[in-house]
Amino acid sequence: MTEEENVRRAGPLTYRGRAIPDTTTDQRLLDRRGPADWVHTDPWRVLRIQSEFVEGFGLLSELPSAVSVFGSARIRPGSEFYELGVQVGARLAEAGYATITGGGPGMMEAANKGAQQAGGLSVGLGIELPFEQSLNSYIDMGMTFRYFFVRKTMFVKYSQAFVVLPGGFGTLDELFEAITLVQTKKITRFPVVLIGTEFWGGLRTWVEDSLLKHGLVADHDMELLYVTDDPEEAVRIVQQAHLHLENRFERDEAGPAS
Ligand SMILES: C/C(=C\CNc1ncnc2c1ncn2[C@@H]1O[C@H](COP(=O)(O)O)[C@@H](O)[C@H]1O)CO
Image 1 (cartoon, rainbow, N blue to C red):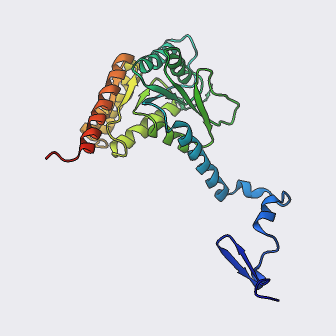
Image 2 (spheres, rainbow, N blue to C red):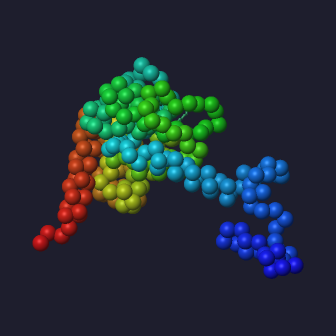
């Protein structure tokens, strides 16, 4: 056997003698036979996770300034809370912000509706759930994610603030993740505005009476939460933080004062 026949190069890999595989990489790629259980393995999942990041970044990287709005999936159109959600989306659009929501029904739909009707960009980042559900019909740009943690990265990376409307466990999860990121300085000058003083008042009191009292949060952590009933005030808070951040970027780019 010549040296030529006794060697196989497969990309950066070299095989000799008995180690030479029976088939080439291309043959294996094109062959549909064989077990398919590898699609349920973790290495394969890693690729799917990667592709979800790639698609998400691709969709959102040219988004204008945006605010993520969270809230219950269960609120019905016509209710007081739903109308509040519509107002929030509309005020954000008038101030030039795109609205990003979880793309589902309830408060997400309300905020998307308000944004779209007021001429703003309305974005929905849906999540695959065990039951059939499509993105709500007030979305201009959307994507449905398989993985909650990839979707959460998109909410934070592509928005300047979070506005949190009344909601349940899902909303609380999103709220506390955001506050933790601000508290640990993973994100800076990132306001988290809760809308609904009556709804959120109990939570704020509990944080103060229990967490603060036992030293589990610091005094200044209480400032991480803004609570208001007024969508216009929420937008003002977002704008102030945004302006502050832009000024800081400008100062940083100008370099040290001589
Ligand atoms: C329960 C119902 C539908 C669920 N559909 C959802 N679609 C998209 N995003 C969702 C959904 N459910 C929860 N989320 C995320 O959590 C927040 C709302 O959760 P909550 O427990 O209702 O507060 C929301 O911001 C989403 O990001 C029936 O119609």
